[in-house]
Image (cartoon, rainbow, N blue to C red; front, side, top):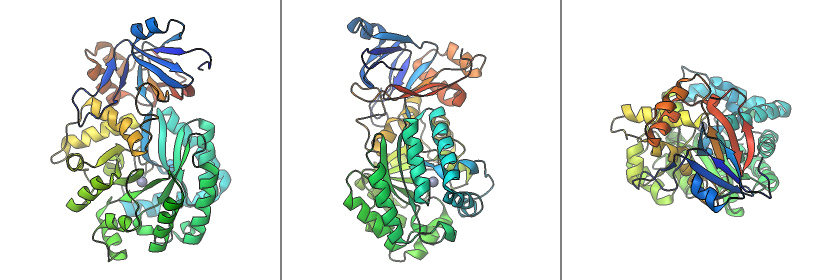
Length: 440
Ligand SMILES: [Zn+2]
């Protein structure tokens, strides 16, 4: 643990992307013999170890050579009540929701069950190196509160909110707009801005939210400063057709949210696999972030994400695991999947390691308006980090021994590092997770 009186200097190779590698060359900052100076939970300096040690000889050095330091990973789309439906393969979105996800989400009406899942959920985030997450809560206020409580106990940065729906799902998940408003107000009062917790207004998707429910979402955002917003957009053709039927006045899916002012900074919409040309432009103009979830897109057969077109239009993009439509909690794996699908997508982007790191860290911080707090190792930010160290006798250990450049080492980490390689995770300098296996 970090002593509040003495500075701590971590020594290990380190990587971060303080600039956007999609816009700037050489945006990856790497130090082969790196140093990260932590003072009262903040980054007091990052760079070459010897330089920092010379300037701060009083600091206690923690020698972490043998592993690598990355900024804490940021998951911008993940569902807490879906932990136990991971692995429901062989279906498409609406069928998967009906058979796999919604029955499990209904079990969250049992508060003690929800507490058990919430605790397992935050542990899963931390053990995969995720320090910040934008999380879909449950359709029940008590279960959503259980997630916030588990988040607070874990030390992670958790933004979440009650999932709001009043039609088209299983009836036990529906709530009137009036009841949703009341529950949201209570949750905001109890959790928003408390410690590392933030509240996110969370209509499940336009398909399951009436106009009255979307109006409640708009009202909540108007009544409280700094609330985030999250929902789904353009995931699956059947879903899009159904939204068009339910909102005949809307020119496209995004127009439904736009009518209620539900976009812009601090708004994250998951997927956008089937956008119209006009939607690209409007998302960019508003500054709404798309949470790209490539494992989920592939697992549910939703389609290939047009990353290049998003970037060209100037739409902000970050990454999400979309547990349980996705395939697990690993943000490194998610970035790898983004890379793999772009390789086979028509007009796909060729992602490099710096871009993968940016998508898994700083892009998420920007999406949540936390770019001055976390997402890279710039001086003054919170010391949120993941220490990757390959276990002995693993392919990753073998590859890293031979990596000639830091880019090669980073690409190998994205390709081969699972949760077994997550040795230590910190938020504001304090350890929130420690791996328990034998490291090389
Ligand atoms: Zn989702």
